[in-house]
Image (cartoon, rainbow, N blue to C red; front, side, top):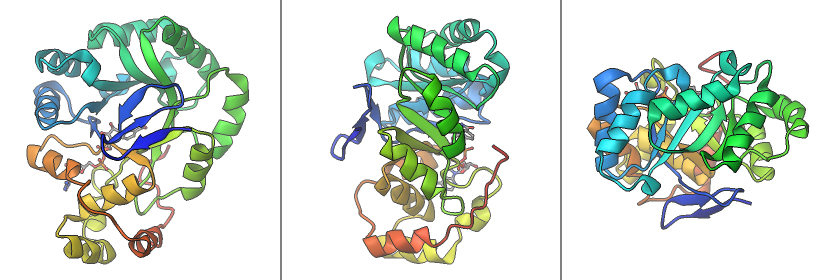
Amino acid sequence: MPQFDAKKQTVTLNDGNVMPVYGLGTYSLTGSTVKEAVSSALKQGYRLIDTAYMYHNEKEIGEAIRESGLPREEIFLTTKIYPSQFNDPESAIEAALDELDIDYIDMMLLHHPGDDDVKAYQAMEKYQKAGKIKSIGLSNYYIDELKAFLPQVETMPALVQNEIHPYYQDSQATTYIQSLGIVVEAWYPLGGRGYQEELLSDPVLEKIAEKYDKSVAQIILRWEQQRQIITIPGSSNPEHQAENQAIFDFQLTEEEMQEINQLNRDEKHDWY
Ligand code: NAD
């Protein structure tokens, strides 16, 4: 089972690799914006960066990582290959390695279920054995998808990245995935772009935020962390980046956790 280290803010995955429990998401950030966002996050102490082939920003993220001057092994880079690439997964993996140009990939995920996903996963297993990918996992696999997929592959995924925020908590899937020894990571941890206004002014969250002198975003991220869910909020704003990592100096009570659990509306903010 994964071992969380609260002091180091890391988790040891089921494959023995260690990853940070919070990081920076980079969906919709491209060009110089993403490069500056990643540089700023690394300067502030972020060590986990999340990207994907589909975000069209791997090249700039690789540059920011190389130019940071940080030892490669201190950084944990996640990328994903897309279903349109599953029929030729080795080329997709090679392309990611080329674009990033940081020697190896710490975590590679299948971005979505799709035709040939088993074949694509087996290619990731091969690159994992060769040391070019350290850990492998899935994204947008919920209970039904996992029950169909897992019996077909050899290596248990180290991580599953799914939509999770107070209005879409998907607790059943999270509990199921965690019971398999797989770490869960939240995408749209703050509800996703376009949904901040309502979520970040939710009265229940505002009341809790006031008590701890924290922002609503910090309360949400803390709630996710206390459920042992990795958080990768997206932001190119250095102030928001600082805020999103200042979530380890307070603890929500069991009652507050329950209050937030009650906010669930099963309201998905994207189609997958
Ligand atoms: P998010 O929920 O992290 O919200 C990002 C929005 O919140 C941005 O508009 C940002 O400006 C704002 N924000 C960030 N910090 C804030 C703060 N402290 N206060 C107020 N506003 C703040 O949405 P996201 O970035 O789309 O999702 C997070 C990451 O998850 C993505 O960047 C991406 O890496 C990943 N993701 C994966 C999938 C998938 O299919 N696997 C899908 C979507 C996103």
